[in-house]
Image (cartoon, rainbow over the protein chains, first blue to last red):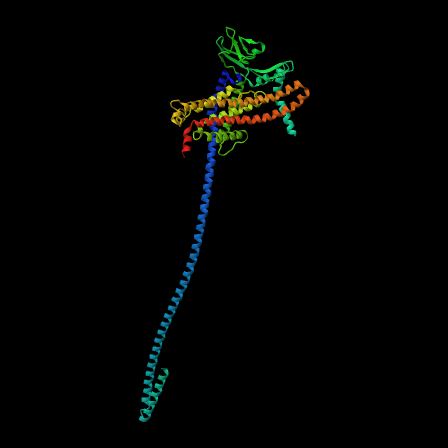
Length: 169
Length: 360
């Protein structure tokens, strides 16, 4: 029966040693270990969460860069098209401008030509008049003797002058 | 096969001290083996730590006897005095009766009685102190690793790694789920209980000094542990716990006029540590007894017949190896179960948590 009867002395020593062990471990033993374990667990959890977040962010950045690239490409196409349009427009403008310039120059040339011609005609007329006058003078000097001959000669000269003038015109 | 043979040889050698002890001290001269005294001589407490017997000489560690008696007052002497004489200053170790193996004295009427207080450092008390010292050293060494290293950057290997694995397992699988939100307060206690029982169980399985003492198979030791859990449960229980104890949530006629349910509840408070005490004590006690019984088979059959004895020796050794492995398992399981039941009881003293979960 003594097996089932707790011995007071042993109970005392057990309480004492277990109490001391518990106090020592409570103060210097387990809290150090458990707090470190908890810290590490927290660290691992945080790291995992951070990694997941970083992954997500990376995916988002990739998506963003994709869209940026795409828009850049669109912009490039648009710019190229615009440049082409501008060039064509510029060319057309230049053509048009050149054409008007040319016409203007032709017009001016025509005007100048007409003026020159007029001047030339006037010059010719003046010379004809001078010539007629000199001829008339000669005729008058030479053909003063006979009226008939003078008259016929004058008529001949006038006809000639008129013919010249008609040719010129 | 080679390994198996080596194991067999090793186990025979391991049990050698127990066998010598049994053969030398309990042969009784007439060839009869007193199995009962062999087994009880081991599993029960004693005033000296018998190591072995060489020839006729007992090799034992004498332990201090501390006694307070009404007759002589405080007496401290070595237990070695009982080697030379039966009686010392009126004290002697009772050979039979209720107090068999304990120190008794004779009062003035000649009646045999125990002294008022017997605080002798017995074999179990001494083993207890050795185990406590070992436990403190082991845990402090483990804690030192964590003080010197950054646990966020390094993971311990070797022995500290094993300790960490067990500590994490006890916290995550036993303490947290059973206690709930307030588990942090009880972690050091429950870890101490687990490692104390586990270490004591393992030391008890080592068949020679400094192991071999039946520490956790002694009811005083398990009772002390159960008292500690009782304190943890009842001194730190919250209001809700005491309300459920004395005014449980049952129909009123179960509480008034006869406080049936409160009585049952209060009864349960004392049954819990009792269950803890008996469970651990019985399991370890039976393990030691079975191991010794298998060893004793050798001597019983040897005394009957030499050939049967030789055959039975092989069988017995095989069974002893098996029992040793089983006891290794039991050593862990019983420490685990004690810790688990303690945390369940502590968890029941924090009922607010459970109420919240059922409300959801």
